[in-house]
Length: 446
Image (cartoon, rainbow, N blue to C red; front, side, top):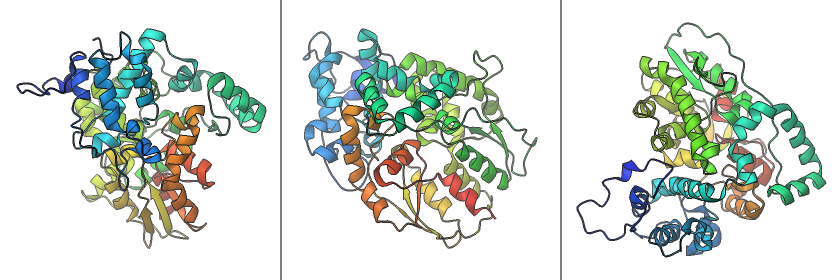
């Protein structure tokens, strides 16, 4: 079986033993599927992320384990000549939101997000990429080339029920769901000092921050500067084919199975990072799913040996601050009015153990009280909550714990969420506006 992603990490799995769970075909991809040992941890409620689709249906068919069984059947030839188009496999994958919860919470560390990307890539190769998938997947390219008309079109669509209904019929975008409005463009490049008191850092600004929430990048730059760092934006390499287009981690392409396009984006990022990697300069990201793609999915995109070094130098905003505080960095902060907050962690933050740094950093604000919401996936999960057939499921995921907690909070309580999709979902499901940790720290700068 020809695979689109690199599955060599599973090359030794099952070697030298009599394990019979590896499908007959599929090579190392089959081994990635077969790590599931059927212990049913994905069929539970309570704490953690895994598995949001099971939690809203309580149907084992919508659990990670059931998806594994469907893939084993497909790779064993039980689903016919075109198994990736078989309705049984489609039904099993329908409500998977790529939350990465299984990679962290499953004892066997099943990476259903990556498995799903390969599944979608196999479908795309045989039958092409759908119009909606092209729209969502190629978002970075659309925003660069057609930002102004797209911004106008989104405003019209959000203001017109007729246009929203038309977009649902033609593109499958839920008419009830507002589309985030485009408010910015590529951030202006500012001359950073040659060096700060604590050295230089590279700020990787993702597509969502560039075009939808540029205030987050501004806040992060201000906080890092106040902490003593010279901040430089990560810009395309000198020989980049599109030097004016902001860099992208490829997450939107991966979510739609557009692996070749994701590889091109990954190569652009790796070329841009080369000087920072050589110099040992820290790389800081703001959007959890984007920065963590550099430490996770980049290994599967065949981007070369330097990916391992990226994993050592790339940090989420709070991760970097916590690390530097352990080395003596001090950030002067003042108390905030109404100093209380509810914090929702992005699924990938939870899957990679990054919530510890969020707690640590928020505790620096004097007299500040906060509570981490014990919730599974918010339900938006990139484009999932925008898809007409998944709109109700998306809201149901939010209603498990997130929406009730936010609605119960006092009006003066701040809502904090690093994920762009999470903030979008919180606004739609509760009417409250959430902010990024960087914005919160910017407000608290003394």
